[in-house]
Image (tube, rainbow, N blue to C red; front, side):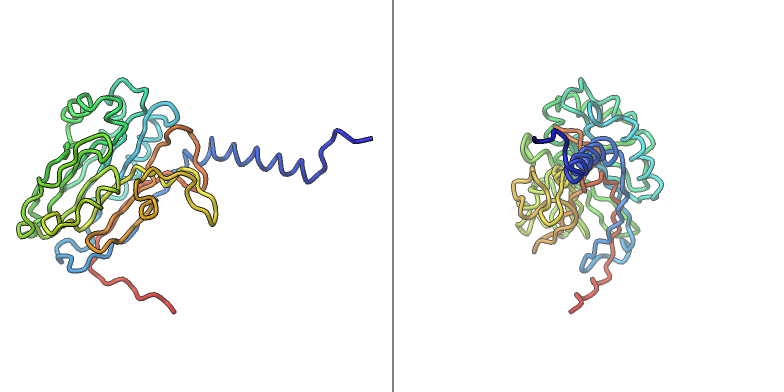
Length: 284
């Protein structure tokens, strides 16, 4: 007679699966990680050595991402004392009626060189006119949609630019000043795919800051992301990608989309530090 009881190995397997599912649903999505990558830039003006940029993206506040998590991410970013703060889109969950609640959680953000934002595809879905109006009302966040600023940093011309969303918006690169008028150019773009449109000499960009992919949200060892929302998914998943004409940093973001789970892909508060020191050679 066959027994209805699972063998010990089966019980352990089921229990392990339940524990992993609980971890992916309730633990990892709230387990913020502060990353501190050094971005090596050939020919970086000496004045910008050590410049620190905080990157927050894909907040998706509401539904699976509580406002308390966004508020904590902002506090972690401020604890790093950044020189500049970049917010690269997808502020609220699709069900949100607006952005006032999530923007209020970002009230503590402040930096000597400013706090800048561009929209993501989900901001367009919630309502891009609402996004622009409510961001404009924020005391410190500046909307950089299809816009560029030249900041004088002790005689060095730092260009901070931003574009509309790659998929739902109308991104424009022609807002950049001529290359000879800028010593270093930072571009805020929700989707890393925007980097593939910045290849001409006039569009010269030194560093692109993005999100959008969430790092996949669910990653498996030796496999990587199960789903990647980037068009050039073989290039952009998470972290730093060097292209012949620029470098792109893709943050895993703070919130979740579709399913409120993360696995081997913790939410990220990135603190990027620029350096002109050459990268160390690869070990043989």
